[in-house]
Image (cartoon, rainbow, N blue to C red; front, side, top):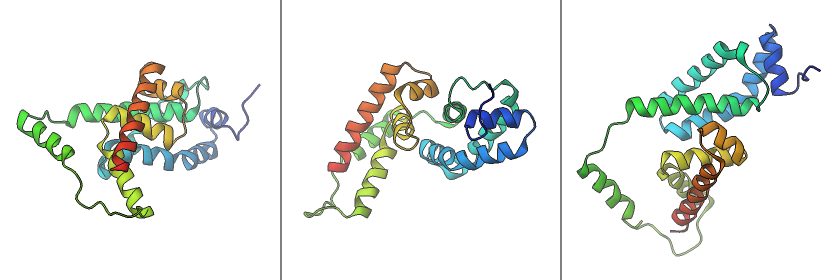
Length: 184
């Protein structure tokens, strides 16, 4: 039985069969979540733009090999995640002892702007964004996949190439760290 054209897998198969409108619909559905994932993962708009284009290029090249065994969004985000990891490996300089100490000192320094009253929505969102950005890459990726893309632990594990328990642990540590930082 063929997958319906309203389903992502059905759209992907229709596009593979030559239906260009099916690709346009897939792109329309997934461009926002994919771009937000990449931007929050790499924290650099130019690099996110580059990885966004490369992800869709990989989807185009691999379209004949696509099998609707997993959700299309999981497959798409896995491609993007792998490209981001490759980018980190190519571009990330190794910090020396002095740089590492400076980062730890900056993270340990208390914020001086804490008001005595309740946080405004803006301030809360700003703290939340800073907290997410301060997470280690693996934890940030797990958090963004869960909160932005509403993926299950199994899907997060598949995308990041780790076991379910590792994904669960990363997510748990990320949540605890964010709660801690936002509460400060």
